[in-house]
Image 1 (cartoon, one colour):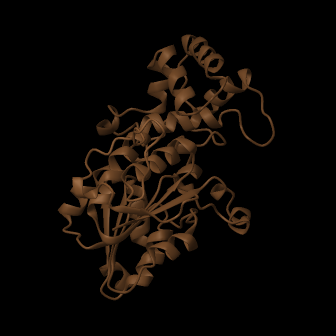
Image 2 (image 1 turned 60 degrees about the vertical axis):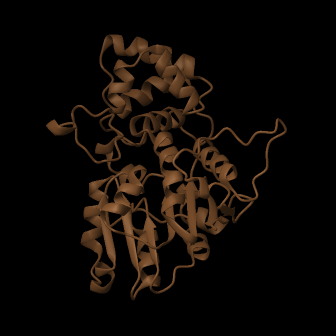
Length: 325
């Protein structure tokens, strides 16, 4: 299957990673394979790319598109969660890591597939799992879905995730309406949920009233913020000295975690006015790793106007880069 996904901030990522022949890189979020392909073309011959994706369909589709045998032999594809980075690297004996790219956004291929339930623009089951599991698969039925959250979580729990993960200012009213509606019948589709939200929150401009609720559900279903917190210390550990870590985030919750984690372990970090470093967990980073990275871009890197014009989904992307010293 051809991919609909366009790699975000590709030129900026390549500029900072600066991949060269014989080097080894990890793409922690393969998606449509744009970043992986661009890096592979730079590192052959002798170099390798370890590409990871939780979505087995992404792995399968990318594998079927790679026709160049030289690229294939330099590629290691892994269906797993990037939060398991250290384990993955050890299992595949992937050493001397010169750079890592991770893109916390979800793929356009996932959005366009109505069966996945990510989009409020297309009717489909309230699923939202990144791993591509289907509710009809017996092995997947115990996994948390957006439908489970909407129909089973308490009013307080729903309001909390809408506020904290979606930063939805009408979380209370939306939650109350959901509770009322689910008493009448189960809320099983994206169209049902959008209709409920639109009864409470009216559209203003081009942004759908359902945007923030869908974001919150996706984050909760996939434990996105927890995975990011688990991933970052591991990325620092597996990088070789001089290696580059490039992180692309898409909303303030993700970017805040990345920003303060980098600050907390940076060589040039500063304490706050109270005399403490930022309150970000750095568990998992060895003692020698704390204070052993250099923040490359003090200000977040954003897409240029031309890229946003060609790919509107890039508009909220933010890139932060560090170097392991």
